[in-house]
Image (cartoon, each protein chain N blue to C red):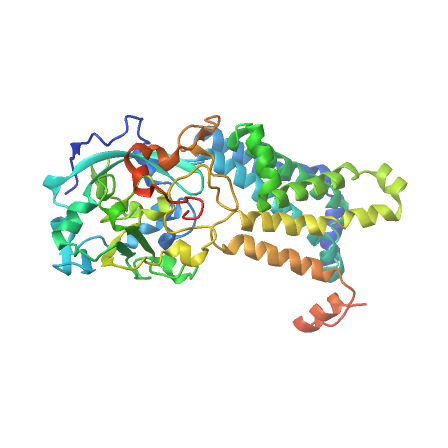
Amino acid sequence: MIQHLNQRLHRLPVWAVWLASAIPLALLIWDTFMGGLGVDPVRDIEHRLGRTALYFLIATLCVKPLLRLARLNLMRFRQALGLITFAYAACHLLAWAVFDMALLWPQMLKDVVKRPYLIFGMIAILMLLALALTSNRYSIRRMGANWRHLHRLIYPAAILAAVHWLWALKVWESKPLSLLFAILFLLFLRFPGAFGFVGRLLGWRRAG
Amino acid sequence: AFGLTGKPSALSTDEKPNSFDEITNYNNFYEFGTGKTDPAQNAGSLKPQPWSVRIDGMVDRPGSYGVEDLVPESALEERIYRLRCVEAWSMIIPWLGVPLSSVLNKAGVQSGAKYVAFQTLLDPEQMPGQSYRIIDWPYREGLRLDEAMHPLAILATGLYGKVLPNQNGAPIRLVVPWKYGFKSIKSIVSITLTDQEPQTSWQMLQANEYGFYANVNPQVDHPRWSQATERRIGAGLFGGRQETLMFNGYGDQVASLYAGMDLKKFY
């Protein structure tokens, strides 16, 4: 069945992923203009963009484990998923600066260096920026092994993004907490032996 | 009673109130969920009638009082107040209520009393959010007695000429407009006069972030975010931010309550 699915995925063009990824943005724009955002559209726009970025980030992180655990091959789409993550994160940052902070530069700068949740968010997006800028064949060829080392930054970026969300809240909320645990689990899967451990835990037999 | 009226008050602001829709669909009332629209969605399970408030502690006439006795319709005043949330957003709300002092006087405050402690209903059946122990329920708040007796402090039972909607703290809630919104405890079931500073829910949860006083103060930031400016709900996408005023703009009336106090220490 997986083989069949992989064959179908092989025929799916990458631009289809780009197109599908625009759906959350289209819905957000639709809601903004149709009054579907409720009492505080600023907050909704900002938060929905941030959440969507984190979902795509986690989707990007899932590509490799899905290949290794389930033999599902989504590698062709990983670059697109990563770039989409950055695009949503950049929109989230822009919404914060323009709508929420009204481009009050002095307060924004003061906050960004002082508030841990903003520092975490900023570091995360700088990391994602570095990854986005080097997400091309030229960089991969030129950087060699350094490219793989650099792109491991996606894990700290993901953790910082989830903590950025948690830290902005007044109480522990279950959604950002579960996303943080999901990211930590995906990071754990990277370590040698983790797959075997998870497999034994789930009672699977290791396939080749 | 579905239509309520209140005498206009000189303590009201002349700023334009937020719409009823905004006031009733953007609430922090964690007893019904942590999302801003959760209270409007989930507060239907609250039964605000019949309801009584226990007044006890250092009072001459302790007992269980009906809301109608504490806040008779004939005594209602309209108080259009600014509300400043600790999360750095704000609204203008036309409350209907009576001075808290009038309620405390009904019970007869004894001379040794120094503080007033309030509690919200504890009933996970009516308040489903209480099944999650994000806060040590019931919600608790408190005021110093002189704060409680200040003419600006009211107990509200309505807004916009209507009985208080459940998500706004039905049937009876505190409104202290010079303090962050979380001080204005909702759906009150008990009021206790005491000589000890009472524990308050947010202080119990995170004492370095939320103090007993919680006066609106643009110079004292929340450890995790700035309190210098605020965003007015309803101002639209490009509404921008406005400067937060000391004591939420009520400094002329209340600053004397804190004369000589270090407000950085007593935040």
